[in-house]
Length: 240
Image (cartoon, rainbow, N blue to C red; front, side, top):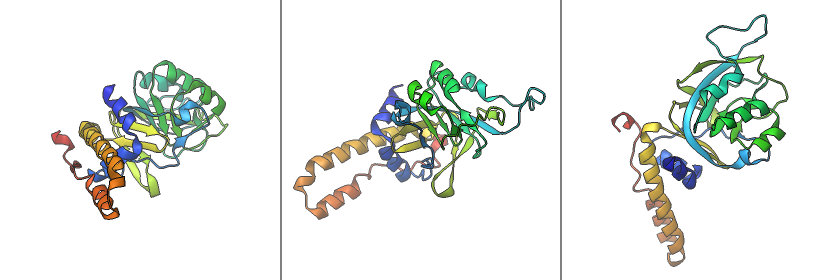
């Protein structure tokens, strides 16, 4: 828990700078995946390991419940118990909401730290009251439960990144979200990213304090040098 609290204290903007400098150039989710509504869950910072779930469009009825290898949406809380962030990849499903008030309340009751999805949600007023941190692609009143099912879990998923890119999120990766957006920190690199982020925060604070006594050229040089401690990590995760 201490590591996740430390990531929250640093924030997504600073951590995204460290990730970029360390070679992880596509770790920020598309800004279309954002807080919904005006409650605490739309703006509060959250950080926890990822539980990855994949889903797809699937018409489910009492007569035709769908393949046995799938799970209905209402079983999501079974996969997200404890201090984890549920990362639900829908492949851009827009046929209905993949989470509403009832499901969000159940996720909060099992101590889920947050939900991040490229799908849609509903019951925004209820979500405001529940306060579960949720980042989604938008809201829609239509219930997606009959139109969508879970097809995979505990395996990597693809999530949208800026400018049409994608991010591969692995189970256990650190998911950090705040009002600036959501970033994914690879699990094996997380301790090093955190340590370098804390050093960057110290350097930036010293720069702010001393900036008044520096010339414009000296300030520019100090800004450029503040990242000099960040090491290239991409490709070395398996050795950590």
